[in-house]
Length: 327
Image (cartoon, rainbow, N blue to C red; front, side, top):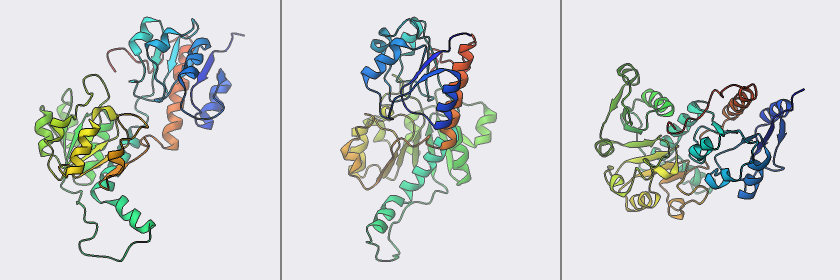
């Protein structure tokens, strides 16, 4: 019998996923679920055939330089791979796979939830109720914005951006978008979406801006201080993609001054180190990267990881192979 692949997972995964991995491979899991330390990661890449990584693992060139000869596949548990140096992995003969398309609906749902939370001031109302401070209904209390008729500008019209557009249309919102490439006319028509080749012009007209593009060198601080100043005073910024796309200090300044009406953020520029200026603002809703946090989504992510590893073990190209330069 052929020796089973040695698979190291850097984080604990949903129980059904762990059980299936253990059936198929020689699986090693951490004793407890916590962010992996660099030493943990170095040990994982040193003696495994496959490492299952997550977004909390920074697999840079220095880590890959310490990889053992056995490591041939990094099966990433997630869609975005900006935490992995895919090009360095390729040069060392290490494949990288991911789990695209699984959490599209979950993340789109969360983006809409954040839009409603901010525009309808739901957290403020919740806080008053939890503190027992509600004094009764008032004609001008907790006034927000009606979603119907608002202009939504989507920055990045991939799978998630399009899923948000479909949901926004159900709320009666106007859908606008800026993307690296324009959608096909039939797709655009189906989404009732208006394309803007100029991001600046789109930003100046929107009531809500939803960030849905990946983090790349080209999108780092794409919403910088200059662009954030283009927003209307009543505009809201939503980010369920990557925190590095927004200059958080510039966003905080705009929110503090009233130049930006509110923000709903599920991701942050410095990971778990949340900008204290954002945390203290009443017009900001902060979530702990919950966009993909559904039972169904996380199990489906695991199933994709298993399929990628099993296909590789059988001598074939993983179906979700990440190609350098195309991420």
